[in-house]
Image 1 (cartoon, rainbow, N blue to C red):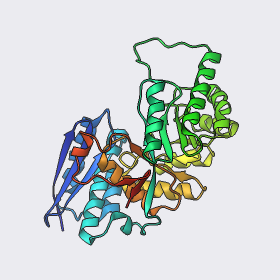
Image 2: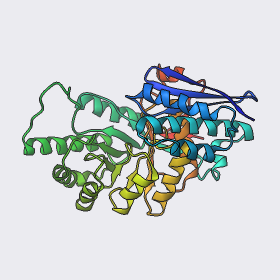
Image 3: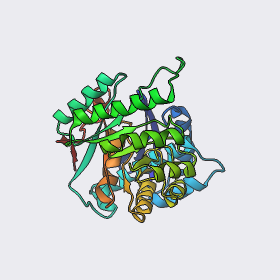
Length: 341
């Protein structure tokens, strides 16, 4: 079996690659380099010059070639590698007539616990999202920010005491609505300093969040470790990281309690499986980042099904709405907050 062609598709805000083989099998993958999709698309076509004529089942060999072939990397390049890797695994699953997770050691669970990804530009909308998730049977809700995402053109200022007390009160409201039946995943979007993150973390400990995500910018692992050492809430981070080497530096500093690799950004299924194993050695669970389309969700589910240290799966709120539901023929089935395999 040989690769005959690669095709890229830009659909809404999502970038896909389709890999065609001479047997008629077609694999599809998605790049997570949103914001730089055209750059990632160009990288896919550059890698395509190497891949055409190759055996699509030599997945690790191709991964290593693409990763090592050029001097420079970054989100656009890694998004391209991720998309191609996912598509190659798709072909392998079809070739062997098994789910991808069966080729990765087999499943260790029959369903995947998901957290409902809430969106809203007001506290009222976010609270309504918590209520909706609870009604639909979800036992975890995420993307809950105590800070609304204001327009960047509007100057932002609050005193420290006002900023912290307002955020703490907002998390208290989320907990009151959720009760004890729903875990809260608090999203900070990297907007705090380490000092502020410690104050906020201590202030919301009594509400027992499942985790606090990206309390500060993620590039300085020592600063993230400082925050982790000062609060009694697990930190989740990793959506911007691209390799096992970056995750290793985070883990060795005890700076994270839930790693958040993006399957469509951190090297595809091949590489995120390695990241999961690295985290497993430190008893750290994996919460795959997934703000993309149903193709990304399907790839995440393959990983979640076969790793022992899986935590939660991010599930976008609009997975079954247009335009997302129109991208795939058969969206994954969700029952009572679990994605069914």
